[in-house]
Length: 325
Image (cartoon, rainbow, N blue to C red; front, side, top):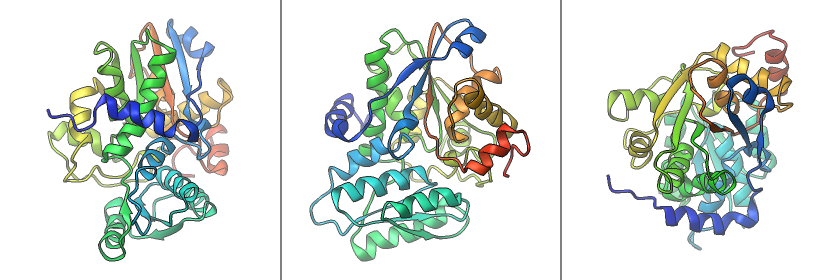
C-alpha cells in the first residue's frame, strides 16, 4: 500500500494545532484495572472545547486553507460539524454544515451556536453530501470531510503521538471506529513507531459501515439506523481514498456492540468514572465490559466525545430506555 499520510504529516499537524487544543489527559481507571487485572488508562479527549476529538482534524485542515476559499463545508453527524464550525470561527471563515435528519437536535444547536449555518438534507449522510458538493461546485466552498482527508487524518493522528509520549509501553489501544479517520491516524502514529501495539476498533451493530466494508473487502453502502452511538453513523464513501485501506492495514481487530452493551458503557462511565459520555464516546469501555476485547498489560481506552442529549443520558443511566429515548 502506498501510504498517503505519513508520520511526518502527523508530527507537523501536532506542531500546527498545539496552541489550539487541550493536550490529551490520560488517567488510570481503578475500577477497570481491578476488574481486568491490568493497567487500564482512560484517554479523556472529550475535554476539548467542542466536546470531542474532531477538533484536531478540523483545526489542522482549516489552518491550511487556501486564501481564496469562499468558506468551508462538510457533511457531519454532529461532532465534526461542531469542530469545523469552531475552527472556522477562529479563522474568520464562513462555514455551512450539511446534515441528515438523524442528527440529534442538541448537536445541531451546538453547531449553530458557533456561528455556522446548518442545512438538513434527507435521511442519510450520502443525501446530505449532495448539498455539500453543490456548495463546492457552485459557490467555491472548500470541502473538509469528516474522515477521508489527509489533513483530517493527520490531525486525529496527533492523539497517537500524545498517547505514546505519555505511555511508551502501551500495548493495546481501543479506539472508536466510524469512517476511520480517527483510528487510521492513531494507528499510523502508533504502529510506525511500535508495530507490536494492538489497535482495536469498536463500533455498533446497527449500521457500522466500515466494519461491513472490511468484511466485504471493499467500500459498500450500509443503511443508517438510529443508534445510541449516533456519532459513529454514516457511510465511508464508495470512492473512499484513504481510510478503508488504512483500517485494513493497521487495525488489528474490529468489534461491534449491541445497544444494551453501549448503554452499559455509558452507565459505567457515569457511575464508576464520574464522566458523562455520548454513546460513541463510551464504546471502548463498553467493549471491555461486554468481554469482546481482551485488555493488555497496559491498555489505553479512548473516550472520544461527551455530546449527548442530557435527557437521553438521564434515561440511560436510570435504565428507562437504552435505545432511542
